[in-house]
Image (cartoon, rainbow, N blue to C red):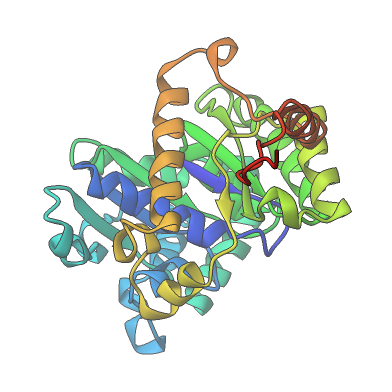
Length: 308
């Protein structure tokens, strides 16, 4: 499953990591792939590879594979299942981490190799197919060769928006890219588009005009927005700094419950046809419904005793 966005800033890494961690909490065996030079997914799980750790970098493996040299991912898998212990989950949470220089070099090699190298990651993951229930890909904020490699390895793809107008353009661009994966890979990959998550959102009483526009455009642009949204919450950014996903650290708090609900929707959409999905309503529809509900509330009776 590839989590993709053309624009930076909507929270792609936190979404990827919390989605993967939520799957592991539910008892699945999951590996998250940090397919980004900034290596933020690794940091969100408490792992930061340095120049001395390039032998453990997914970027180095992609370089080797792009040059046609046989290699394996098994020797660079990092087990982060210890993060699940406090929740007594029987799932596994593994990481294929990134390091900036090696992933940047892989980006150049894959770009030079063109379409012929698009399936590099898909072939590498084939040997791990029986080890995991899910693989989640955190990708760079651009339409580039690393995104192409991730989508060519994916069976599913989802995107996300924040309450900023520019993120709509990024989500629309990535949905268009997903549609063309089959053609670019000669039918080898054809990921199913699952929809768009509204991240960093706010309660209705705090909506700006820009957030209203974003919510409306997500529906109008046929991005198939998830009903569940993830609200802006300092605990999420704080958990990133501590290297423990919010869905684990704050499983019983509102932010953790929202990620869990989002995961339920993702799994449901994976198993059902698009025409059966429940799609989030537009902001205009929500505001109209709220106004109608408010106008239908009967006036409260006075509690004061009447005078004779």
